[in-house]
Image 1 (tube, rainbow, N blue to C red):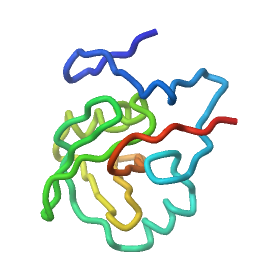
Image 2: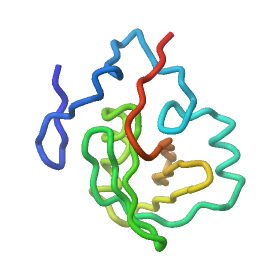
Image 3: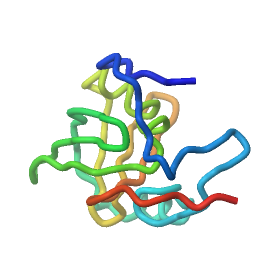
Length: 129
């Protein structure tokens, strides 16, 4: 089943090697892939997060801005990236924080937070169990 971006109406095209079935999940904890709980905890405790604003999500790629400039990064799952950023794109008042050290974007919802591991350059293939 094809999923479509709620912002552009275009189909979301995942990296061919990152196509998964419901039985598969990426076990790669490197930058841009599955967020490891230790990295999430260290980021939360580390204090290097800065306010950010999401500008655009396109497949694996996200563009966001901080006081330091505009950045383009990727995440291994275009579906998760789109799902996690939808609220922030609709509601620009929703707090978004970028951690350059941990390469993690945090979206602070009123009742929970979404953590998105990001990387720069080309998307790398996932590793599956």
